[in-house]
Image (cartoon, rainbow, N blue to C red; front, side):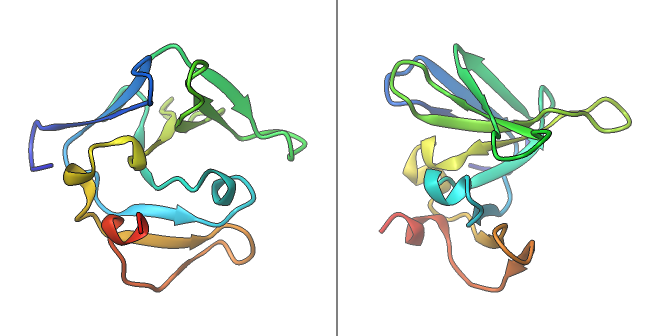
Length: 138
């Protein structure tokens, strides 16, 4: 993935749903919260319908472990692949944050991306580690 107007595309296994991310995805996040550690996803962030778009039919699952869920995850209803999560609320200016699962992109397009490790289970802080996406696949 290069600079400027290039797009990265992540597709579910059956091809029924996909996301696009325009421009450089930057570092991706590996999180160990109760949700992310089960999904083993690597997240790239932006705002819905800005640099990130979701296409195709998905099934949404809001966090059920919270009194008031703040995000929902989206899956392909056919093959079950996790495509993204999106905030259930918007910012003051009406924007909605999303994160796409980089593991659905072609390996050669994302292997070089640095990975930030985030302790979403206990401290809610970034954990210093040096890794790239390619190292997370093995």
